Image (cartoon, rainbow, N blue to C red; front, side):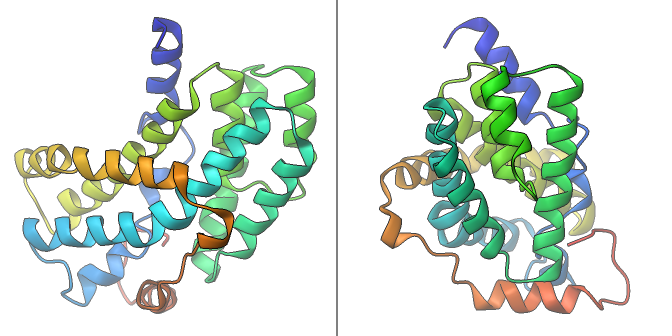
Length: 226
């Protein structure tokens, strides 16, 4: 990868990107509340299961398709996978999360004047903008190779999950870095799997996670928005 593309990817995947990712746990806070995650081992098990059974089977493959759609300037494909991703958000919190972060990232890239007129038209044509669509647009506009963009998104997701555990299990900073390091091979496997999954094999079927998300809506004490 060229140095410029690498630097663009590091900026796009950075936790300091002002889209509010730090304020979401994606159901993890409910798992902490119920004692399903309570130490480094259970935190790793939770993240790995979420990665392989939800992210790698739906969110990452949809991002992969959106990257290809923006790269080829295929507006119909962008519309299709954007609509399907939003439709697949099966709780109010999960839907609000992706729309809020997608809106924030979309506004950011427009304010930074990223992307040509054709790409911008495809982005702005979306009635609602989920995060994968905005992320794919930014990656293509910044000339980040799709394989690297996919890994960057997966790492950013994993890092946010680990940060939730560091703050809320709680884990020490060293334990958090040890956990993140141990996830590298899992992220590589997930990225490869996502790239080769057929359309008919996509699935975000995870009723346990959906129930935890619904329960989080009325959780008495919470730090995160999902």
